[in-house]
Length: 206
Length: 206
DNA sequence: TAGATTGTTAATCGATTAACAATC
DNA sequence: TAGATTGTTAATCGATTAACAATC
Image (tube, rainbow over the protein chains, first blue to last red):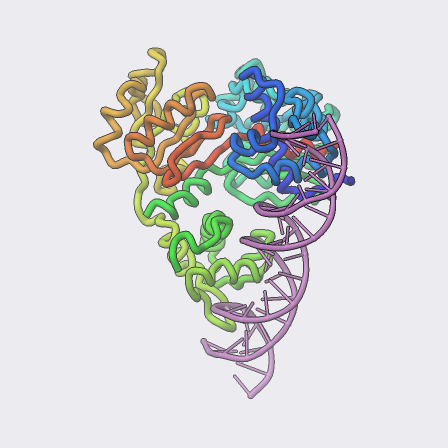
């Protein structure tokens, strides 16, 4: 089965499965059935079995799935058995929160460089990373092997930053700016905008 | 057409439409067609017309949609013509970023109270809000009219905080903790977890 | 009027669910 | 062996897209 033969929506559920398997592991469970997993994730056993079947048979009929080995299989499918280097652009409050956030590192995403325009932050060391002048993006990133960019600049500057990152060979962008980024189609973009989520929820509040 | 007759996925696109109409407005456009809107949003004109038609006819055949009036209609459907009060629990780096973020306020979401456990932050004033002891959640929130909670505490504490907020009558939760929250079904939950987004993107990077 | 674009219905597409034979 | 649960196929459901009459 080729990469793009699996529906994108299936791929977006796999990290959720990994998360839940992790929880089960911490709770000391070693085997889990699709129905238990379904309960935790508020989905159907059918969906879980169907999703997994795109990649192979990971379970044992009659008993279920080995928690550790299913987790390892999914981690391997998602390419999580390596450290991914991340370059962060924009060290405002959100950028700082990301630099301090240890969840990134624990999950294998290492911020290796941070950039900002402002003399107020350039040179400061935050979460172990020294903030550099945004003008140095190319100099610092282009030769290094950086796959992922995190954009935490104001909306007006986000597209320009994206262009520069893409130019340096970045292939995935985590975008916190409330704009649609135009990127070549080989580049993944994930948008994070809490306001859009709030604005959706308020529909149901009245 | 009743609230729940409109597919949820349609509702989640409406804030995006509002966002784009806002941009068009700032660019000085006063009229827009479904195909222009579709180009901006990387979707089809059909989808946009279909989505809007759940709520009525907002356009003018032959010319398109009046930017301002379509935006106002959508804002009214989403209940965005009021200020929504938000209580924030957890003043770590993410909580602080939200307290400082002016985009919330500009979009009509006002953080009116913030809570934390730690004596290091209790009493501090951040973004104009004085952080209170988490033990005061009930005392402060229950009588006030607060509809939305933002949870930015560690994963282990998120469920307990959610329970308390729900108990105080909160009906929507913006959850930054990487766990599934169990809530009564009248309560909306939106999860924000950048790691899940990264873990999805890495699938396509190899 | 002619051209453009809507609103809506019908056709298509894709995702979810149900069912069940296979088998641990 | 009997019971449980998988992996997979077929049926169903729902969302997207195409088409077009209505009309500005």
